[in-house]
Image: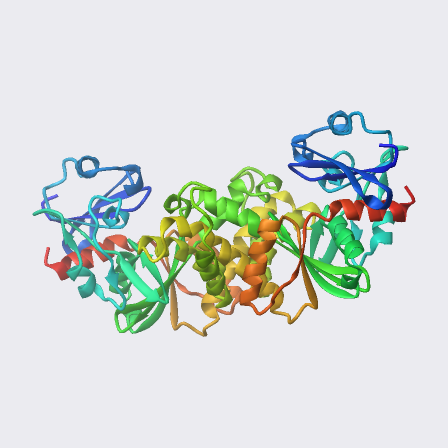
Length: 297
Length: 297
């Protein structure tokens, strides 16, 4: 551990991931805990979670991103406004004490405000790993609240959030559609049903109307019960993509995050004529390292 | 009760409403019960609910509409296909026994199948009460699953369902948006926030994106917590209307159903230039009477 340089924390709502980074940001050790920011209340709880996850690691500087910096986090690190590059994010970082700093989220006001916390760091990581994206690219970070971020000249110029993952979970678990579906994970994913959902979304009907078809397609046995979750997923992801691509080609497109989910988006993007987007796994450690360098930690 | 002629049952998923009808369909008595079709399982349970709600009424012919005729109802009355008029619905009615008949739902296949059960009877009632609608009209029946039905020459030619009410309930109760909102009914409705939501929907962004603004508008205090449910409602209803009106003017427009909800739709429609639509309260008794006449009950 003598060459360890930084403790990097990707501290989201439901999960805390800690990385011990060495020279050049190499990941020496990774730890994960269920002590996400939404599970903790009060300064002492965060301090304890930090101590637990970094137990017996050297007392290095620590940099954290994500919901840990929200209103209900350890302490609030106000959003940096778009456009923003790594230097702007570093300037807005909050020094919690001599050792620990929290990165800000990003805010974009395109008529109505939009926000991210954690994804800005993944974007910095993606640009550090693929400097060719910095000139002009669209970075897609799928998830509960998917982000579509536009990058130009190394800066995030704007972004939009889609509640795609959350809508899927709500409809899958609590809606009238759920009653027709088998339990989660009861059958292997059906890419055929998924793509049928994407194709329906490409026709650009109202989402609130097309969702009801998940019910009727099941009712009339045009889709088997075990295909309905994938059809629903395709419908929701298809609507997200249709709207984001409506403004024209977004430059180079990169998918960042969970590989299985990125694969789903890549499959759907193919139906829109976007082939072989760059796919990157979690780039948060690279982003935290990059931002720590910028901050001189 | 000597002039009673028909027992009319509006038997939905969660609620059973029974009407004792006299000559010309006049409502002599109304009863309501929580024994909706989704709360009952098996023939005996339906028989018992029927006996209970009609206790001490004369042994008249009875006609029922709604989810009572679904796969999981008393007995399945298969859907009649669009286009359909009152005569077609009457032909598809299911004779349960010497006394009781169940009306079919309506099915429309515009690429993907769409269905209604109960609303077809309300539509027949609306046309009986307002024969001027029969030539060409658009009937909107707002609710958990809102219906937009096109009527031409006395027939329902097609319709579309929107899961607007259900999406509202899911997002209001279970989503990340719910956390920012006060408890239901904690404050009077804000028509200003409702119309702000409608106006946002008129801009035709992606629903999955605009929903996230409910969170950020709260986060940045641009809307007060108690305004957020109405903003959400406006957003969802606005999207529904925007898509349904996109194809051009639908002829005369009538709203059928719960007066408070119809008032909300009328307010929203005003922002789309549709003023003073006809508003009708529950037309199910009139529809059941009309269909009973057609069937010769």
